[in-house]
Length: 499
Image 1 (cartoon, rainbow, N blue to C red):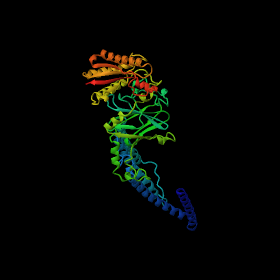
Image 2: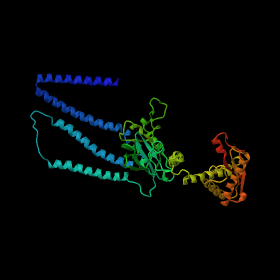
Image 3: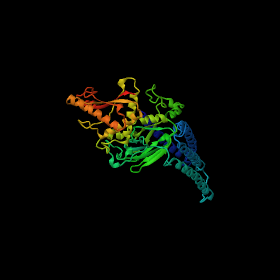
């Protein structure tokens, strides 16, 4: 309906213009073409001046009206440490170019009025004016020199890389049609190496080299979460076409170029919640976020920082938006603790795992933490039923009481803990599934419990603090009818019998 109204309006204006043209032609025949020509000239000159005045008023009023919607003004002041300097150079440039814009518009339209054709007026011709040439050469030279020098200082500040010993969080963003792959370092604080030849969309979307142990704890989140007031270095790259890593509220904008890694360093200075509170003071941000749900959240409540692609990279370009959250340090650390290494969750133990069959330092350390936590919980428990610990990483050769090499890490950790708690006495219980002869299972469970006891004694734990008991298949914890259940029943347990 709106399109029809616009079309009819344009048609009506065309008819009016044609009719006015015909009236003008008739007037020319009646009063003489020269007189009509001069009248049209005067009328056009006056309308040009009126247009100039209205145009300049419109520019000023519209800029003022929309200032709170533009970056750098109203609630949209920069949320990064370097952003203020970029806004400053933008404002300085706007002032100079604004002055030139207004002066040129006035001269353009005023000259059209002042020097319109009139009877008896003769144009003055001059070929050269040194004074004018000096004015329009020297003034732009001074202004441009100032802008360039000030811009270089701002550029060098905004684009400076981090020092070798500087504390910084380094993350990575890889663009592709039409999304971003984000990567964070794990506890080691280092991103592992990549090789595009290793890319596998199903299991290795970034081409991480699993032989590089720095990759082991890297994780791939779905959103960017960063702590406030902490310097961040973003590695930026692309898998396919040109993209652009754009964080408008932080004044961060850098191309993602295939085969040519780039970077940007910035320090966020406002949390998401602080930015929302700033928006709350503006009426337009207190309107419903969804006009069809007036009872839902307001615009300021639904606001989030965002990562966008500022390059027209294809028809799905819009879908590259990602949420960016800036939080306090403790909230950031809590978020980190909930993330899972991509290697450990997807690659570990598969054919793509170069460390298959051996433990990593991180796994050994984590097992020690887990066992210590279980031991401390058990030794402080008042209920005897809560004083039993399953030694999940103690393994034996099939049908034998011979410990596998992989068991030494768990038992070494246990020996260390018992040395620390040097008055605790424990019972080591061996358990089997129900496959085979019950008496054989009983003997096997006793032999396995004694193997664990002997290992701990060799590590310096006193024999009077260790008791080995075999329970055979009498105390199952799962259904022996399934392989998974039988595997759970084949276990070694530790029970604290005195503190």
